[in-house]
Amino acid sequence: MIDAVKAALVLFVVALLQLAVLTEYRAFRGASIVVVALLAVALLRGSVFGAVAGFTTGLLLDTATLGTLGVTSLLLTVGGFWIGRYGETTARDRFHAPYLSVAVVTVLYAFGQVALQFVLGEPAPAGLVAQSVPLALLVNLVLTLPVYSLIRKLFPSPELGDRVREVRLLG
Image 1 (cartoon, rainbow, N blue to C red):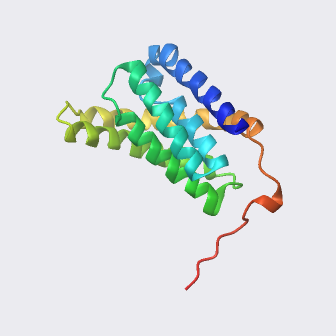
Image 2: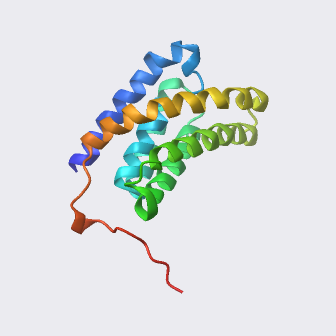
């Protein structure tokens, strides 16, 4: 319960920072500190926690920007679930895990947004997105270390007896 309240506060503050401050700067137009923070929380707390956090954060962003309701929620729910599952199964304690997670989800989020806009019949500038992805990827990767470090301090790892060290496939 405490983790849910902390995650809600952190993601709310990060969403406000993204919408009120960072969207005014050209370098942050395609990048998203919300995605980085959500992926850090999902990586540390698991798939279900990541999916719920992604849905609520996406709903907050959709309502705040008056965008198409559900588009950001869907993308962040899927991203939070996948990265939470990645953290549960293989890579929670590895150094490269947050960077790999942010890189993959940044690219998939950008192209997923274009695909959903196309399906919904809205203008979907794929060429513009393809041009902005490298800068967004670079900025998100630069933001990963400080954001992940802060969130790791806020969400310490559970005791060793509570977590699974390795997943073995049967068969």
